[in-house]
Image (cartoon, rainbow, N blue to C red):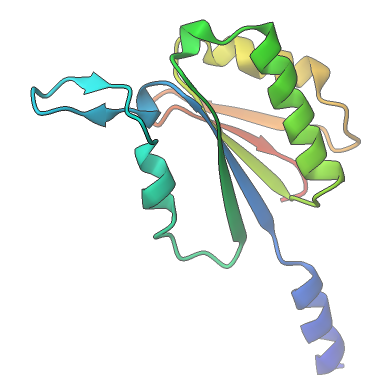
Amino acid sequence: MSHNIHVLQKKMTHKLLILHTGGTISMSEGNNGHVAPSKENPLLTSIKTLHSPAKIDQEPIFNIPSPHINLTHWTYLKTRIEKAIFQENYTGIVITHGTDTLEETAYFLELSINTDIPPDLEIERESTLLLVRGAL
């Protein structure tokens, strides 16, 4: 019986994909104290230091201010989320996003994600994270 539980636990390993789209959350503070876009998203490095039982992968899919996100970006984001869920077996998706168009992105994804698992979209203005939870 304990062998069966161990096998079940092994199969239930969660896979989390973090998709970075840009916005203030992906900027760095300069010497003058102002926040500005940087060549590399500082979250890419800091998230690598997390100790989590889940397998965490991340992709910087865009690095643009959120007012510049348009239908082309939303369509790519939708397609990437569906691929992650259906083909790559991710159990959760986190999208880092700026605040200016966060609601529009959440609304688009809510209406367009094609999954049997209804996505749970949570918006946190303080941390500027948009969480799309599937089978977590």
